[in-house]
Image 1 (cartoon, one colour):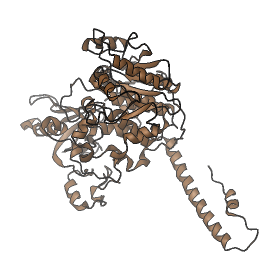
Image 2 (tube, rainbow, N blue to C red; image 1 turned 120 degrees about the vertical axis):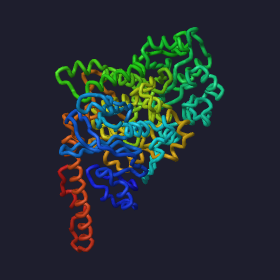
Image 3 (cartoon, rainbow, N blue to C red; image 1 turned 180 degrees about the vertical axis):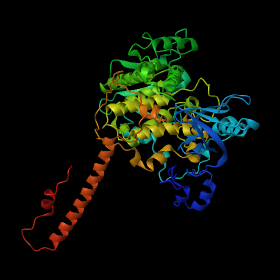
Image 4 (cartoon, one colour; image 1 turned 135 degrees about the horizontal axis):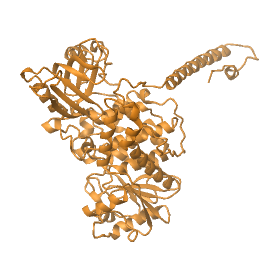
Length: 601
């Protein structure tokens, strides 16, 4: 439990008496009448303003800005509130000028990372927006102004320490490692081999430390092939890495070729399959910048498969198009053609299809190597989705946390660059929704296999909300070494501390544990859907239900079952007590009594 829980937004903070400093906090929170501020959150400014609501026209109200959020509350009859973590803001622009004509033409326009835009109007006289623009710009982009992200200012406390969720050695042991074919190496303990890899790596048993150093010189960013997942039964593995540095001249590296052969030999297959996430033409083009792919002549015991997944720039543009058609208005008449023109579901299909190929190959007993260009975007999508299909542990609430910590966070997905935490450079070409796309793929799988995942949709939405919020340290920085040098585990709270403080919110009541089942989702446009609950959730005209009626009823039935079981125990206890005190020789045993008690389940 959090020591200072957030009160529901429609309740008074004065009721938050669980905090030891409740009376002092209530004074501090008085200006934000409807929202309890987080420990460490401080109010910076409030201002009368008009919110240009795209659904209810202009709404008069007051905007409060803290060091964590923008909060708007209306002052007229229509109930409208906004609660936007500043980390969600991508861009702040001035709208109109002092001489602008027309009602509400002077103000601010805010572009968000979570599929919505906000527009506020102010009075035109006396530079009325200057103070709020400057403060919002400063606090929404703290790193661009020499300030700290909110995660470092937060004073939230939880009983659960989410930083303990993932421990590399423990996870490799769970998989059945080390073994006679695979060993753990600490060659990267000071991030000397590869500054974007974790300190603990698993490599072929026969590969020496010197072999690893030589292979690193031939792989982009020194991201050598290392083990991600081990199949306990058939000993096939998923390896991940970056592209080889072949270049225009077609360079070869005997150490790299031998190293891939060691991977193949480890489980005795005749061919090693290399999955290159890129389209063939892109992989060829990468030769011009010193990269490339594994050619048939050099890697004779390997087969190369291109998966045709486009790069970060294509994905960024696709999401922009999707945003245009879902916010603020959804145009019903051309909906299907508009959705098709974004190519978003097409990209989801290709990512899922690639992961299915990886999982199927490993399930059939062959080891695979997966890479894209640098091995931290499409590679992470493919390996983690394949592992989700192959390993039921990752489909549990705890296991999914481990999967994200391992494949995305510790193996160096560039969260800071892709999301732009605290950075004003909204047009940065490094920005891309790669992780969002992965979570969308997971959602598609949960739709196709509703009983196979222990966690529910709410968890996926919460993860994405806090991907942007900067409230927790989990998704900050680009790699483990950067988190280490910034003391993230010491100075910030983990998202999993928050999630695990009340796991009941994230449990799928339909979950059925099936330890050995491999999931193969259908990666067909006919079976993929737009994730409306996420992408169109800000539109009040879309019917929102946090829980389906079936799910709600099922939870009620489970609660009823628990009541029956409790009653059963009480009856059993009273029966056994009664029988102990009874001298009747033919009295029924407690078990005989129980067999006549039936519950509706």
